[in-house]
Amino acid sequence: MNINNDITNDIKFLAKSEIRLKILSELYNEPNNIRGLVKQTKITYSSVSNNVGKLEKNNYIKKINNKYYVNPMAKVYFKSLMDFKSSIDMINDYNDFWDKHNLKQLSTDSIKNITDLKNSTLVEATPIEIFKTHNTIKRQMQESKTVKAIFPYLHPEYPKLIENVLKNKGTVELIIPQSIFKELIFRINGKTRRKAIKKGKLRVYNFKENLNLYLTICDRNIGLSLFKTDGSFDQNRILISNDLKSYKWAEKVFDNIKQQVI
Image 1 (cartoon, rainbow, N blue to C red):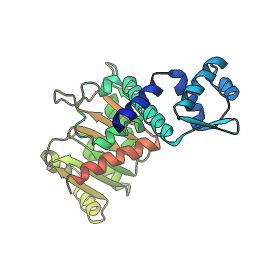
Image 2 (cartoon, helix red, strand yellow; image 1 turned 90 degrees about the vertical axis):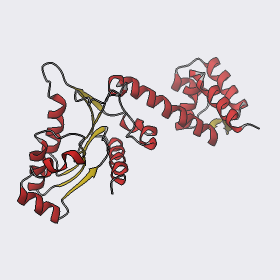
Image 3 (spheres, rainbow, N blue to C red; image 1 turned 30 degrees about the horizontal axis):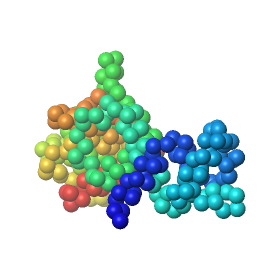
Image 4 (cartoon, one colour; image 1 turned 180 degrees about the vertical axis):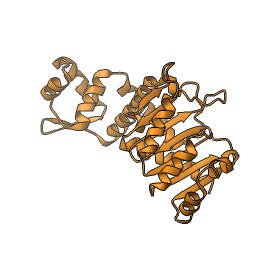
């Protein structure tokens, strides 16, 4: 028996029918009978009955006391399909952000869980607001007590923004390329910098290779920007979110890259 072929055929059977997917979606959330499924899906009785019969015949669902339940493996297949669909939908929604951009610095796990960013908002610079992306991050940092960031380049305002977080008894953790380390560090007030380092409030990690992504994790928001495949930084687009799943996703990206340094 070829297990891979069996799994592929199972997923194809489910994916090729929108009606079967709707029925599974309802049963995945709560067992139901055919009349209940008709009411919930707004699909005709004959279509629901026909596809329930196919699902039951192929052992995706089972009938217990006049209600249908999803079998364990069918739940796995269905969830995989929905996760994949969500990933495609999210990429399509923000096609300009993901297309022709470098994703190599994102781990396989980060890409696998890209749907954690589905509640994000794409902020884009305009001819009228050419600094819109930078100003968005600037506001986030100004309002935060804790900042984690991956800065692939040094913006003139970053040292002062970091200094202000530290002066307000906040914590800053940075991953930056070695090429900008001295310039960034020594543009922060010396007394503030030394005090923060001594108390563990400022931690800076040198990344010896090229950094191909931009990430900020502030108190309430995260911000993500990418490099284009031609090597240039896309400063005109940033994906932001205050969603908990997005926040956890961003922290895993930060920790994964930090592990490459320490």
